[in-house]
Length: 418
Image 1 (cartoon, rainbow, N blue to C red):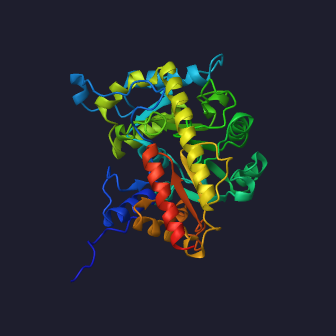
Image 2: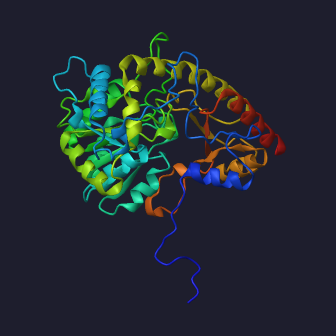
Image 3: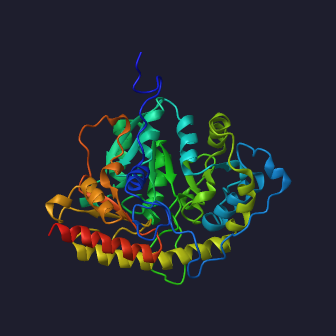
């Protein structure tokens, strides 16, 4: 028998960022190479930025840290996260988070995987476009049925609360997943709008699973002297009864992506079941890193880091926005979160209007972008028509020198076809 593949295994698609990085490496890309610019980058720059608190440079490992962590996470860290959310979002509220509402896991994807593993046989809503890694996550687990909800550019990639209510009731949704702020569009659900979403979760008994990993990257703050922080935790009535699950971690908002430390805030009953899922999925997060995370979660540290992010990344955002507009790439100034632009290529020369072709031409000039089709979350490829072909995601996560170099490269790409 002549096998072309190893028996028993299936093809597993790469997420958008992993795909573009794999293709770039074939063309000679090496991380840190000053010739290249990675505008497909899914992580923020991790060094010192103006106004930020000191970055951790060394780790101290208690001998107990060589043991396995509890699957729910380090108890001191769970206490610290509960206290942080109570301080930032729940002052004066009778219902407060405790350590029993917190579970620690090894990064955002693992937090999502634990949640997905614990879901029952339900209709599960998700939005288009949204985070590329959701696609395989929603394909692998067969207990629930993923139901797409299309967001339109004409509506600013937002959905009214009434329309969402109709989606939930009409399609029998028992859970909805979304990133807020949204990766890739940058749209933010906040204020009364976010309060209405939380109220809708209570009203319809539909669980809202909110990926808040970019919730410190907000740029439309009217008060320039203070940072703006967004979380659904502010609008929850009862932390143990409201069907709202919050995912966050060090990856984006604290700019420590390599630590792979994330957390889930949820009613105690949910924390119990996702801990059970973690007991066979991953066995618990990195123990020494959990203990070293504690100083990063003091409220004053968090506010200072968030303010530095909003000031510094806001300047990079303004710079990239102007450069892209001048090239004829359509982006909106209303995108008020994350460190991405959801860029429409429809006004470029016809050879570059497809995001995949645009990406491949960019590789020739040593610049990386992410084609928009990867954000058309399509579990099991059940839909034949791929949307967002004339879009790409462009990141201002890298340092300024890399942004300048990458945008110069995109200008050269476009000039070739004019």
